[in-house]
Image (cartoon, rainbow, N blue to C red; front, side, top):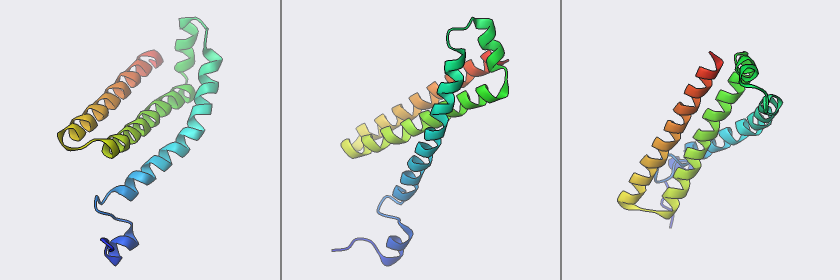
Amino acid sequence: MQYLTDRKRATGLGSSHSGTHHHWSMQKSAVALAVLVPLFLCTFGYILGHPYAEVKAYYARPFPAIVAGLTLVVGLNHFRLGAQMAIEDYSGGLTRKALILGVSGLSYLVMATGLLGLIRLAL
């Protein structure tokens, strides 16, 4: 028995109306992280172990600061989407809603804290 209409099957919308969008968001962030993580490791590894003044001067330059900021934002967004998918698969009811809100809040809090630290370091 088919529960999808021809139109929904063609547009990729199932019962939740967001599965395709969620999948593509995960795929895009995974590809972005495949590029950003090696760049971050190279830029961060170069300055690792240097005195604070040199690190501050290094992250005052735009390229390392942008790479670190993008890695932080994209990585935590990818974490949020992946954790949300796991929560949706393995919990239900009010627990599901509370866990999704908690994970989303945690990821945005860590993202804001990291960006604030990066901005304070760069300025």
